[in-house]
Amino acid sequence: GTAERGCHIVDPHTGESADSGLASVTVIARGLTEADAWATAAFAMGEAARDWLEELPGTEAIAVDTEGRTWATSGFARFAAA
Image (cartoon, rainbow, N blue to C red; front, side):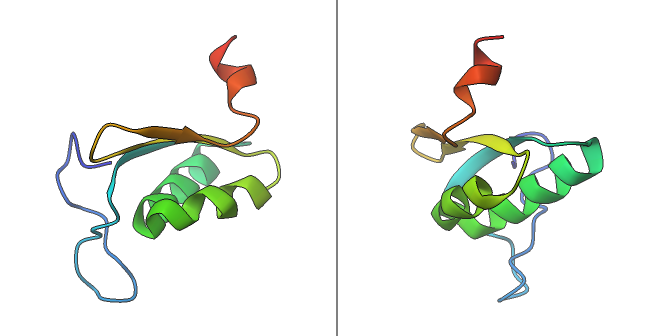
């Protein structure tokens, strides 16, 4: 997200800072590099990332939008309860 570093994620379609409507995306994946890459891509995608992340094997995520609403992939709750 943008909380720590400001707008540093670029929308590959426009070349401008991503204005996806998301404030942050947290991804749990098989490794740190994969989680970071998927979170960055998901942030740039915005709401469309939810369905995309659901399809990635071994990956779960939670996102917060700029209005403070959250959404999570279907399997994320098992990690939140741990």
